[in-house]
Image (cartoon, rainbow, N blue to C red; front, side, top):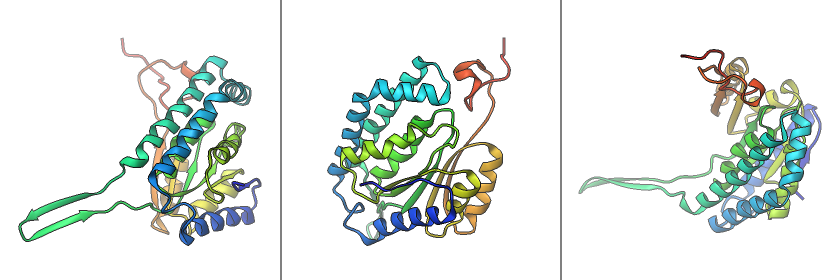
Length: 245
């Protein structure tokens, strides 16, 4: 069974990190899994989401308060993300460059290790899948910290991926608040990568704290732009506050 770690205590974070670290480092479970099989797992996950589309959309709508039509489109995007990155599994390659008849170099791509995704409340399942799917296809183990305000559809992801054939220990769903779940993950020396979507203020904290252990950090932070403010009730990082006429 795919490990899910409900709770918000520091010990739960350590359990999740240790399991993800062990699964990645010991080998034979996920790193080294043939690319075709990794791709098939994500494609099967897409089929499962498609099968459960209406149930997941209604769950997303009830949890986040968004209109059911918007929720259905979000679940469509979840299907697309699993299919898109599933197709990339067999297309991750390196490069060889010849500098001169006497010199050449080779680029070899390897999984970074244990990756963490910290996701926002406005597009819960879609944003989680945007971070989860590419990490899995790149052979990383992954820890998701779903938004505490809207976690329900994110908690469906372990069930979906288990049915799709993802090995145990590869994906961990860790509920909790930023101070008790997100912050310990960012500070852990056993975590190699953090991807965060949220506010500028929290993004700056993650960048500072991640520097202590030389983490790879990817930040998608809130902003304003001149366009319609009412898309998704204004609960979107590109919701504009002004219109140019």
